[in-house]
Length: 479
Image 1 (tube, rainbow, N blue to C red):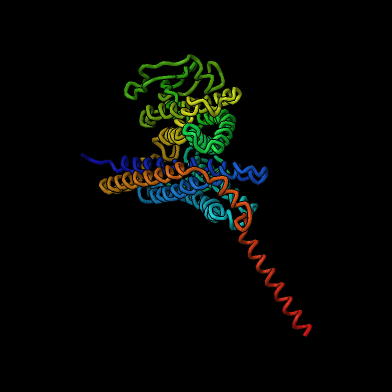
Image 2 (cartoon, rainbow, N blue to C red):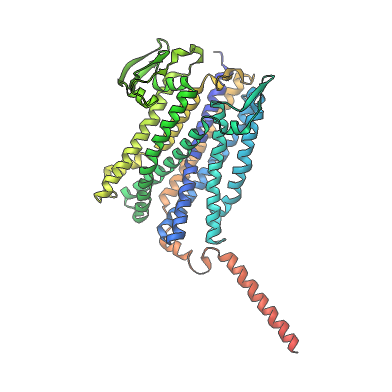
């Protein structure tokens, strides 16, 4: 059997990037939640906020480490599997990746140690500053990665000289047409992902009747967050869809299963099996005109379809079509849970309804699944282009022996499977152990174990030493 190096390289990159994105989608949101809890603790002195922050900082640290380890691999794959891409777009992509390291990674790495281990070594305000810095670092990291990927989706601010991209305007490169929508969409998706991870574990504790006050506080806050974030994400997604319709109409056609070169009165397809051979949808079930209303904000608006471009310029329609529906379906499910939580809260049954708690627990990983589905829509929907409408993916694959790529792909699958197993093992241990007790937290708020005690102790010793020296000098002077 002949092996296609291009297909193998694409599968390898798809696998490694799918594994990697699991962890930033959690850490971006979790860093934000920890900063909120620590800030509320400083303001209100409510120990349950401190308990939330100190418990979730450990899962954050493990997840952050997994994200760093799995992310390093991706930059090397640009050079090994897609060397022509690095050669052609290095003047654009290279600096953007460097900015991410210089402005975000150093910031995160520099203050992560203080955030994790500085509870009894620095003052409360300094520790909170470190937590905020790590949070901002995760946002900045997401910004530069989304900038680089968005430029590949909607390239602007460049010129092509001798087959290589050169930057004409960094402002146009950075703030390309799709970047603002994709960045906000990703950040809010990460916040929702972390919100449902915390809510799911809190609901699990309530079902098991463990750590009840801690779990009630976590679930309550996360349901309020979900009530705000999920409709916000739907609104951002609508704006993003309008942007995709303008700049990547073929991708939008694949998302909605639209085949005619141009179609008005587009139905919203609830179910269909896109058939790329017949260029039509099998078993189609839809709501008339609702697709046009959503996609164009007009009841009978026209949308460009897949037949407007040659077959070789179309993505894998079934994958894009169903990935989009998985993402949207999970999003509406989360929105429904937030609304149900509000109803149960008003009835005083938020913490006692077992069916609701079981549903929230089931949705613990759904944010990650939705993020993965969204990325499949973005990346598969862009194909066959690596730089949209300018460079095909097939043109930038390194001329490697297929057997070597198959070997590395196999090793990645084995090693990453072991890594995810280790990650889930330690996460399970942390969840089983539960949050720190109130007695342990109380001991950290008094006496020598209070935050900032080390610095205060050194100052105290220095003062005492200075006083002793002064007394010795005075005694010698008296003599």
